[in-house]
Image 1 (tube, rainbow, N blue to C red):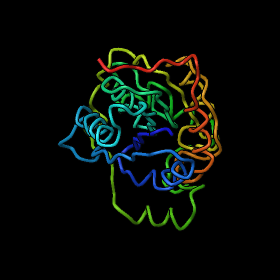
Image 2 (image 1 turned 180 degrees about the vertical axis):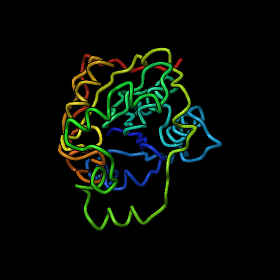
Image 3 (image 1 turned 90 degrees about the vertical axis):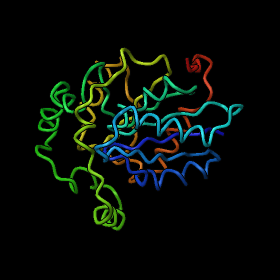
Length: 236
């Protein structure tokens, strides 16, 4: 059994993982979807990291195997910092905003050329239904769009990423082949430039945990399978 700590993207709403959690549990794993208060201007990245660390501590006993941390999109600014605080088996970056040391989430877009990449892929501008929910079941998409508004705070885009380097932890990138927000070619380039990694690819768009939970669960399970060349990162 593997325990997956699930960090949502911008806004931090744990409901993003609502279809993936049962898919992982059906495979015999445990899942911890974290409610990250990234919409709250009174909290910053250090607070968000502490929320994730506390959620993991509540569910992962000291004698349990270390968890796998999964960070969606803007959650990639949080996931690596969590891996510096607790023992983990692996860090999975899902359709991620891979940060560079000292970079803010607000600077990331121009630094990576995301707008140009979207334009080249035919998705200029932004439409939440077109770009985020195009492959999410219609009833679920309507329910989410009509629900709680969890816009990320201005502070979350303004704080520099505090790490001096990437944590010494096995890291993989998983990219949705149908992502319209971060097109596949863009994700391949950024993953290679920033981490020297080639993404694993799964069908689905930017909100792949909602649109293709079974396929994503299969991929996460395969990635979490023991490998002799991986070393668990111990907290310092």
